[in-house]
Image (cartoon, rainbow over all chains, first blue to last red; front, side, top):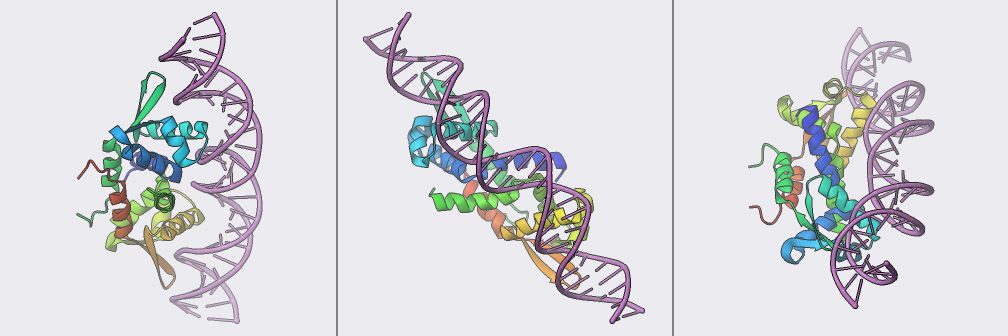
Length: 96
Length: 96
DNA sequence: GGCATACATTGACAAACATCAATGTATGCG
DNA sequence: CGCATACATTGATGTTTGTCAATGTATGCC
């Protein structure tokens, strides 16, 4: 694995390697219509709205979630390809 | 995903979510006999011996690598089950 | 025993990070 | 226009993290 490869993989992993963000991803994926707005998420994770927005931005920047603004609300959806991709990159050669 | 589940998954991900440690894992896995000692690893990653030992300890604590002391050398091997496990936990439901 | 080798641990420090309060921006409604 | 709602951004703060120099520990060899 080259240095740039390691850096780009680490960047995505870093976004996900945080308990709150894992829960956010999980909550978004499990939510009705597979999308959720910030107001759906602050109460379940028990953190302030700015903090949740901050975490969501990190997940969007990493390509784990995507954001769509509809009226007053910002809807977040999972980008399954990203998780699938890092999942495959992490699978050890012996498996499969 | 519950809070404890998120925390334990995040702990393993955190160990791997670092470029140097990803390269170390990759180097160990690709090395002859699928094991490597610290002296095999410092030069490829270009960091000091204490720093490499430090990263290896984090990977061992997370269950990603295992360590075996043989004489003067400490040999590190991959624990494939750990990577397989987090790989599966990260696979989105839509995949498969 | 004495010395070299292989590695771990400690201490220190700058950089990155998670969090919140306060404030800013934009949308919708009357 | 004026106000409330939903969310983002900024600034500040305590904590974690990656790194190295210095030192400690243990093994092997003479």
